[in-house]
Amino acid sequence: MSRVVRIFRTLRNNWKKSTVGFSLLIYGGHWTYGKYCDNLLRRAACEEAQVFGSQLLPPNVRVQKATVFLNPAACKGKARNLFEKNAAPILHLAGLDVTIVKTDYEGQAKKLLELLEMTDLIIVAGGDGTLQEVVTGLLRKADQAVFSRIPIGFIPLGATSTLSHTLYPQNDNKVKQIGDATLAILKGETVALDVLEIKGESNPPVYAMTSLRWGSYRDAAEKASKYWYLGPLKTKAAHLFSTWREWTQKHPASVKYLGPTERLPEEPEVTPQRPSLYRRICRRLSLYWNPPKEEVVPEIVPEPWEEAQLSPIELSITTQNQKLDLLRKEDSMIICIEPETISKGDFITVGSQRVTNPQLCPEGSTVLQASQCILELPEGTEGFFSIDSEAYDAMSVEVQLLPRKLHFLCDPKRKREYLQRSQTPSEGGESEQAAES
Image 1 (cartoon, helix red, strand yellow):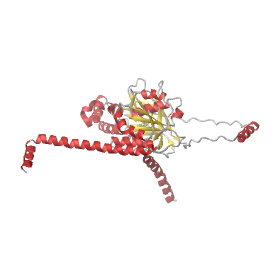
Image 2: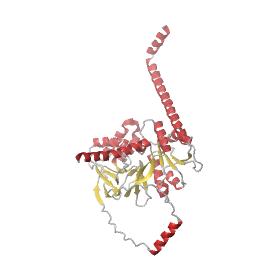
Image 3: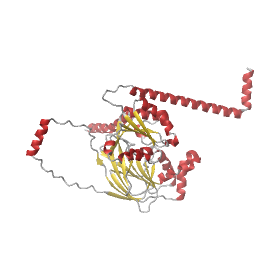
Image 4: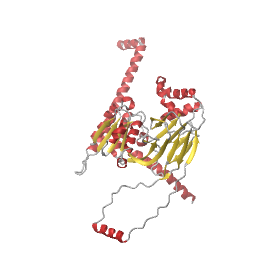
């Protein structure tokens, strides 16, 4: 008993050291428990992947080949370690023939795609910038019509991985998020997503999966890293300091656009069977004796372009991939033209919200739906576009929507949610019409 009393007396007399010691002990215990939980998550994911790898293949079926484009610089240089610990074991245990291509500098993925041979899967391990480079390189290929049919998997390793919100359930645990994304790739469920084709005056086209942004919110968010010493207040500080330099901030431009287009049904790829020799001979004889008449092609009247002059705080052109509707009847991209006048307080508030949700369109904005648009900027315009979180020089561009251009691998539960969400409004509308009749 006396020993216990002496220990408590020592702790009381040295309360500062005791407090620091207890704090370090609690932190160390929490850190160790977190590592233990992460190992359990990795083990569970590997056991699930082993089920795929243990399946027997028929003699005439070869092992699937997967090409992984890994950006080691993503997530502040932690992407390589995250991939090797959490994703690579799952891919290997699943029995895939994995080829890992590591990029060394910005823009290299576009060049490497030119050398890409036929593969069964394309996996992008990185953030929005890596995905944008791979998609651009893929669609610039001469035989892009063939390569665009290859399923694409996305492992979110970057600081910004916007498309992962569409493809997989969100989780604050990075290990769980990477494991779920890799397992979803193995399950083979796909969704067709839209792509933006952005053409400049002389540069080759750039392709985007989420958005093109131009304006003050984008410029202020780009400078937030300069105020790292302010911690969580750095974003608000960047927007506040930008209002001191120039106010009001406007970006004059002219927009010409065409309305939405009707969505055509997606036809399954079916290889037609070659008819018999007798049928081929009969068809040729019938065409010889009764040649087909020349069809008169009706003259197509071009749809008139609509034009708008604007000078907003920010303008954004986004796909509808974030709010996915698998059963919608029209294909369109969203042009969000924000108000020309706004208070400084609202600018700071909305700007902070747009850092976490870049596709946010605040109240009071003009929203247009278009299938194609031309954004014309005045001569001498300086600044940068943000195309899928990557900076490009601002210039006059033509933006065209490529509906359902690429097929991305997604979580099956996520796809069922989209199908249920798409069917619910129509079912509700039918029930209301039945009640009225």
